[in-house]
Length: 194
Ligand code: ATP
Ligand code: MG
Image 1: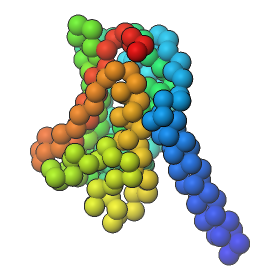
Image 2: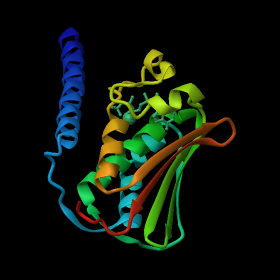
Image 3: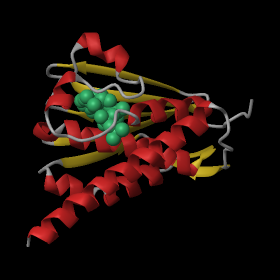
Image 4: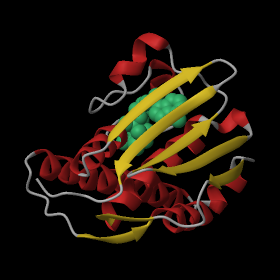
């Protein structure tokens, strides 16, 4: 029994190390421009639907529900599908991890002119205003998250921001009592390589 317990602990720790190494590699490659983009046609509405479905067990675990709203049934954009999936994976993961008391997560797509806007909103914990500009920095974790045991290395949003920049897009955050925490991503429909 004792052995099993320690093996489980060692396994969980090695999993965390594996994630940290992957994140660090990903982040360094991205920041030194050594990541080659694999650009193609991606239906962003479909991609978000699939991601949310895959997260179903995590939503159920935290007693959360999600809603996906879009002003279009599908929206094809020119982008790197893998990078896109990873960056929204980060945002949804955060919404689940930090929005556990909020009961629901809302993902909204708004395609207008030549830009698609995706917002991910969770309720519950509000990020203090003075910390908002810092959360995209690598290794930065809000005080509250450092003291509670949500795990994480603070690389998720740094990687997310870099991936969005590679698509010539932007990301913003707002967090207010009553309104919840919203991460808003804007990406041009067609990626123009620089
Ligand atoms: P990981 O590297 O595993 O993603 P992380 O989740 O701590 O670790 P980031 O995703 O970069 O790192 O987020 C940085 C910090 O911003 C988090 O520690 C948390 O304090 C805060 N944060 C991020 N998303 C949310 C959210 N949706 N609601 C509340 N706080 C958030
Ligand atoms: Mg994260």
